[in-house]
Image (cartoon, rainbow, N blue to C red; front, side, top):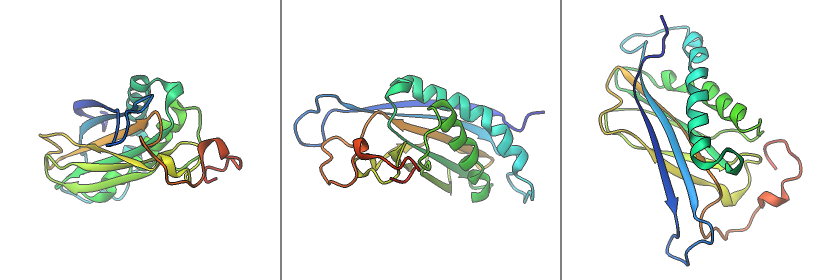
Length: 192
């Protein structure tokens, strides 16, 4: 029997036209794809989480494809991932998403090298989590440091986990703080 039992899925899309300044010529779009799944280890300590992490790769691919399709795969410039573990679980149950979610986004987006930023928490149903984002090819591209909120009203229940992937098709609207620009990325090591 599969360790992955999905109760519900979510797809949220935000379109940002301006942040108080003039409307952007091209609005920023951000998408979050997520799933609320049963936590197979809720209420107990499980020493080996690797089977769960391995099975989550398939869910990660589905969510990565969904978020990328919502924005246009060739337009994605920023990404991040998140997990909210219900109070019957532990933070490490959400940490399995680091590999499964990150690997999935890299696979779908053509193997970008920048680390996928993440947020995770143990919380009650209705908790909202800010998911950090940055540029997919170099972590130091300041214009793409951003965040998107994820959560569901009725989850995660104590024995569930919400796993989410977030993507954006550009940097912040009105960004003007200098630093490394995406057109200056030269080292291709995921950093600069």
